[in-house]
Length: 472
Image 1 (spheres, helix red, strand yellow):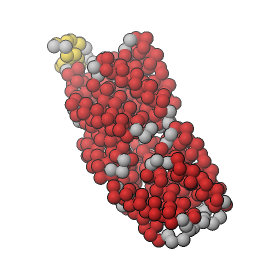
Image 2 (cartoon, rainbow, N blue to C red):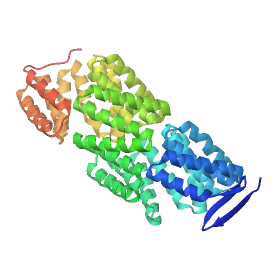
Image 3 (cartoon, rainbow, N blue to C red):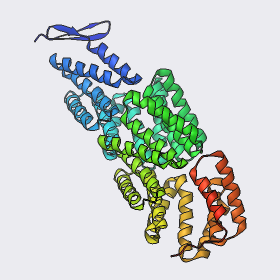
Image 4 (tube, one colour):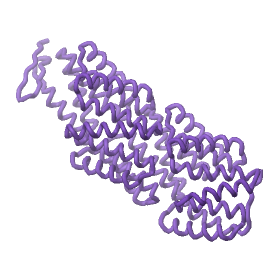
């Protein structure tokens, strides 16, 4: 077989089986298609590139193709297929002492391991990339490794460390004029602010990301930005706006074939339906999410779906199913080190155990949830976990429970925290002052949001004319 390589207008052509093939041109086309959402077309082009690089006996080009294809397969949630390609490329680049090639192959491994919840492998690879790339002065690869370390620390509830990594990533991207990198850094910083309860800063960061992604035609970035904005609006009780953003993200992800983000969108739409009392649709979305996540071995989406399903089954009074879902979600959280989600699922199971009068188990679960939430400041767990702690105390000592609730009420300045505290104090004491305050707060909250819990609380208050002390 004849073998020849030549350059024309900066395009690498390779000769195989008697004719020249525009390798570099097709690779650039594949890169554009990957950015703009034509993932299957990009895959077909790069697979053709790989075939011709092999025929032309160009192992360096073959390794580059394998790295690119590995990344595409991760985009398509085919993580098990992505890993061997990246490993083969890494082996070749190591044999040639190609530092940039090694780093790019390691980044392809990082992407697959990250989505599979294998965080130790991610951190090990990222540190190796930083060591290699810093020595070689390849700053853009250092930035990508820092970004991934930030994501892992964020998922593990280590917000300060995550923020440092994202800030370093942003600094490098700005120096290099890397708009896509800046967009991703903005999105990640927005997630840090969201987890810490700063909705205003989170929205600003995610909007910056959205604007950049629209400007450069990054469809996946647009989908992710809409998703992240939606999660902030859920916490702000703007459920209609959140639903619209999740739906947009879902539609874009269907166009891309982005299974992971399709699953995330289904999970978030399920959460909105759960909040509004549409349990049948919520369950359908969560089941779709779980199916896709199990097929692709995406542990993050699995635990997200299972947590939602546990909450849905609890609302539907299907307590055995709820417990099974919470147990599986908690197990996955422990396995992957997802502290934020662990706190949420521990508390949700604690609430379930309390409703079943399994007070000892409820207390153990709630104490662990409260400890984690206090350490990493999970706002949507802290207040309800403290309330549940007071309710558990009231099971054996009504006066102690009342003291704890009153202390929490005196310290609270948030209407969403004050409303349930007043409701529970009314149930515990029968004091009409608490009832009137709770009615006023829930009426105000219900007028601003379609959350089913607000209407249920109002119905509950209108039925409660005498105090209720929990029985052991």
